[in-house]
Image (tube, rainbow, N blue to C red; front, side, top):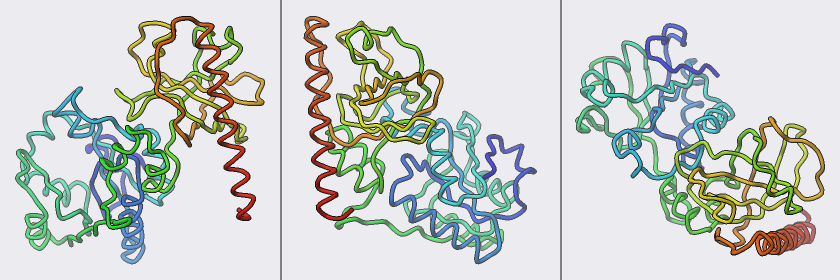
Length: 318
């Protein structure tokens, strides 16, 4: 997959393409339906399948700290789009120039710079300064400039429209099974293990520390997780996501994962942490000894959960 961050670099892209535009935060089941249509349409027309996203996301540009938490990092989104079969990803910086671009200028960019021959967007898609452009505007412009515009169908599960907002709400309330249902996979973080204060090791529970790259996390608390390091082996464990109120006055969100039945050095490795069950909220303890006792209880809960899950899978022949 070609990753293009500046529109001035479009000369390095394919000549013509089928394009869809959106945030694709989380690349959930609804997104993957649209991406499936995109790839299929591109193959039928013998064109490149292209996606345009913006960094930061427009809502982050306009609302700043009041913007909702992201479901996935930009890096994870790039990887998920690659796995979906996208040929070209335009990950364009959203800045004052784009924010003030008129609907007419935006359409000109589509056909003149990106060479769009077929465009797939939702019927609620708006663009241009003050949201001047909409689906009907695109249809008229496409007829004039020689590209087709296709409506992306709404993806429903149990009669409910799958959206990043729906998943974000489920994550915030600790409903990980519901979030996984709409995501089409368990919610996960990925990142590089960094050195910490070694407090977990002192407490007898060494942790792999990962800084949460997004400005805010969609959830916090203590969770039963699986951790996959670069070896590809899967380890069960327990993880705390938050600001560690019992350790210090940190404001940066950190994921601390304790791996069961693991000994070794993960520093510098990129690991993937998948969340399965919320065990409790993050809270401050009056002493490190009390924190140690709680971590032990959390670990026992997580092991019980995984043992029960494994037994259930075995009973059903999975």
